[in-house]
Amino acid sequence: MNNLNRLFQFASNMVVQGPLYAIANARIHSPIPLDAAENWKFWNEQKSSWVESLVRAYPPSSRRKTYLDSMLAQDHANGIEAHYDISNEFYALFLDTKYRFYTCAEFLSDTETLEAAQENKAKYLLSLLNLSGSEKILDLGCGWGAMLRYLQDAGHWGELTGFTLSKEQLTYAREKLGLNVSLTNFITAPFENAPYDRILSIGALEHVRPKELQQLYQKIYDALAPQGLAVHQFFSFEREPYPASAILLQLFFPGSLLVIHRHHIEAAESVGFRITHDSIHDYKPTIRAWYKRLVENQARALELVGLEIYNRYMTFFPVAWLFFAQKEAELHRIVMKKSSH
Ligand SMILES: C[S@@+](CC[C@H](N)C(=O)[O-])C[C@H]1O[C@@H](n2cnc3c(N)ncnc32)[C@H](O)[C@@H]1O
Image (cartoon, rainbow, N blue to C red; front, side, top):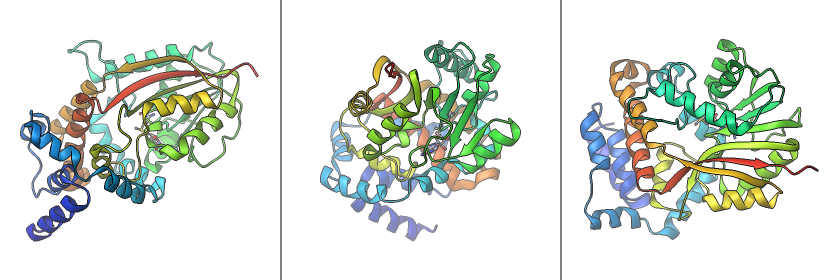
């Protein structure tokens, strides 16, 4: 993209999507790789209060809603493919080497490796799943099969199934790991082979749009055996339904819109679930670790995905860090229990 086109794009983004989006998009289309230190500082240094207010207030909320509604009208699957079907090798440059979790880890100290922190998270979720070993488990949005593999390593022998929308992930999970994973849209497709004893999701409910939530919880409830558990890890908005950051996030997950946390709980309870656990965890150290690894692997990343995608992820991580630092969203781990009948 030449300078004139960049300028035109910036001006048009300013008017339609607002300054946060326009600035991020201009940086993504930078003609050179973003400098690691400058880029992190750019997003995370303290801004004056008027700059903060301006970027948070424009476009006004009625215009944000109109824009987001138009984004949400597109097929959800396109946005998933745009984000995940890039290159398995690219993701491997910054994810933990053992399991390839692309979700919030659990750092117990500043010196811990990403690998150890991802295993801590998996262990935590394993404890929430409360397994004896024989349970039939469905993983919604299983990614590269990380949690299914962790369950196998932990000695689970019951049937394991995973759904993803990404063809790249499917190939890896099926062909490399031999897991029972299929390309199934958990929002639109029926859950075959129900009932399940446990339904799990890690970092997938973020892709469920507000209007799809109630129906999805109903489907999960119906697909569980009596006394079955649903265990979910996801982040959700804490306050406003249409903050300026929801528009910014369209650059990374087109067609997705986070749900307010309270609405998750209300939807789950309305179909009959009892919430038996809801804890909040810090996503920031994981994002920082991914950023550091991506920067360390800049040369290979550029070879694999080119400049624009490299700069897109270089922008995504500090923007996401800021999003959690400002507590626009929180990462939750939740257990939902089905009643006995
Ligand atoms: C952030 S990744 C998390 C992957 C994995 N759970 C992990 O912990 O690494 C989100 C996953 O959700 C999947 N996903 C999102 N929406 C989906 C849908 N409607 N149906 C099936 N999979 C979906 C994506 O394909 C991707 O595998």
